[in-house]
Structure formats: C-alpha cells, structure tokens
Amino acid sequence: VDNHESELAQSVNGAMVGDSAGWDDLVDRFSGLIWAVARGQGLSTTDAAEVSQTTWLRLAEHISEITDPLRVGAWLATTARREAIRIARLGARYVLVDPWEYVDHSVTEEDLDAGIVHQERDLVIRQALALLPTRCRELLTALVLSDPPLSYRQLSEDADMAIGSIGPTRGRCLEHLRELIATVEAGAVPISALAEGRP
Amino acid sequence: MNRSDIAGINDPLLQELADALRRAEVVPDDVVWQARAAFAWRELTNVVATLEFDSAVDESNLAGVRGSGSDRVLRFVSQFATAQIYVSDAGRRLMGRLDPNVFRSVILCRPQSSVEIDIDSTGTFFVERIQRGLLSLKCLPADPMQRTFETEWVTI
Image 1 (tube, rainbow over the protein chains, first blue to last red):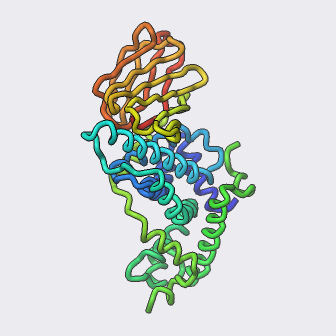
Image 2 (image 1 turned 90 degrees about the horizontal axis):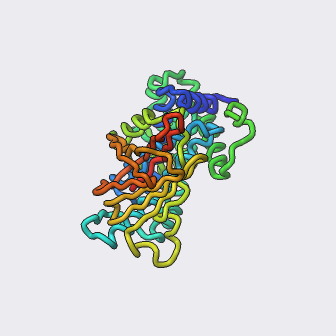
Image 3 (image 1 turned 45 degrees about the vertical axis):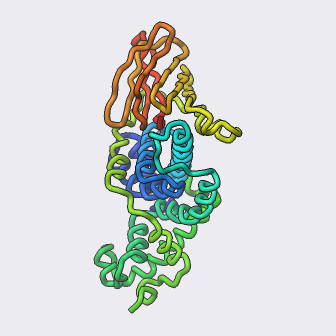
C-alpha cells in the first residue's frame, strides 16, 4: 500500500474513532468537490451550502460504514449530488405552490442533466486530486494555479523539497493522478488499495 | 519565461487540471466551517435510521407529481422502528408518526439548536410553523432501557 492510500486511510480511520484532525483532513480534501457538485447542479450558494452541510453530517453519521477509504470521495460526491437534486426539486415544487417562497433554483431536469454532463470531467479530476497524498496535491495545485508561475526554486522552498527532486516528483504525482482518474472513472478501486481498508 | 518552461504544463493532464481548478469556485469560509463542525454530531452509540422514501425525489419522475401540491412524505427506517413524516403547506407544518408506538418525545435537531416535543398516545407528533432547513429527529423511548431512534439529516 503506498503513501496516498495510507494517508487517506489514516484520516478516514482516525475520524471514525473521534480524531478531529482526520476529519479536518477530509474536509480539506473534499469540501471543494462537494461544493462543485452542488453548484454544478445549478443551485444558489445558499442551497449549495445546505447541500454541503447535509453531506458532511451524513458522513459523520455513516463514516463507520465506509469500508474502503478510497471510496470516501465517491460516497461524498454521490451523497452531495442526491441532496442537490432533492433541494432543486423542493425549490421547483415550492415555487409553484407559494410564490412568497420563491428562490432562484427552479431548475428543470434538462438543466440538471446538461449540468451533469458538462461538469462530469472536472468532477472526476477534482475527486482524483482529492485522493492524492497531500504533498502531491499541494505541488500540482501550486504548479497550475500560482500566478505568476512559480520557479522551481520557489516551489522547492514552499514544498520543502530539493530542487532536483521537483521534476521527478511532479512526474510521479501526475502519473498517480492519471491512475486515480482512471480509478474514479471506472467507479472501481484496485484490489491493492483494499489492503489497508477496513473489512 | 512561461509556465511551460518551468512547470511542465505542456503535459495535457496538467493543463486539464489547471482548467478544472480555474473553473472551480472558492468554497466560502462558512461552508468549510460548517463542514468541520459536522464532526461534533458524530455519535458512536445510536443506530441512525435511513431515509428510505422521500416523495420529493422518489415520486418526481411521475407525471404531474412535481408541483401538484406541497405535501411531502418522508419515511425513515431502522431495524427497530419506522418514522413516517408528512410536511405540508410548503414545508410549514410537520406531522410525524412512529411505529412501534413506544416513544414519549422527539427532539427536533437543527445544526444550531434543538427543541423537544411530546409524542401523543397514538405515537404521533405535530410541529407548526417549522422553518426550512436541515433537520434530524431523535425519538426518546418511554422506557429508558429501550433504544433511541435517530434519523438521518434531511432538508425540509
């Protein structure tokens, strides 16, 4: 079992037994994914916040049932999507019966479907990124998001990594990301990843 | 010097990652805070009843159901008990019925507050002027040796 699986497994297993640092790590990894799922369904920021809160409360209730830590991202994304659809439909329903309850989320099913297709690839990438070990996640994010682009010297200082190892590390992290994207797309987790999971 | 020189962003996957992250919104601070705070609701002892049926979602594919009225039915099921919840008047009034009829009161939990309501002799309870938002029910048994019945969180 390599590092990313054990790192994520530690957080999931830690949260199960009451370790808030493990929980906070899950929030760091996945809050962006959940937000993207909810907003991708056409919800307002208020409703997306509610979807996010419901999703995390649900995880708190059900975390002891997560038998494979690598699946926690898919579990969160599925829960968030289901809740987003629920809220969107509640909004559509209430708008018709009570105009005073009007809120701007009267989306149609066609909107939902179009949104899902359009956002799908981004969400797969986000989910795979969230599954990466922290070091890889931070390095890749810094590489693509810093503006102006960081030099290897700056990256090496920020990531506390020797300059010479940034190139190879970046390559390994990208390879890892590629594998995780394939895993997420397949909706399956490799057998080797199950080794550290709970039964 | 451009990004591709130093960061290897010419890798198509890195470019795709860059695009995905740039399209992504920043998660508001209070949303992250709520996510962290959700951990406090974790309970090891109670079995949580799952939402088995929600007419808002489970009937929405039937023609004419969506928007045809504001009544909503939710059913929570655990190994030991079932709660049927009816929400009417655009979510303003709530009635709940518990089976078996062994509970004395129900705590309406909201993320920020909670209130306890009596259950009548028929196993039914009513709440008027209920606010929209997240809700979980914790039903307390008349016999303290029996199990508490607790539902999943749901938006009403």
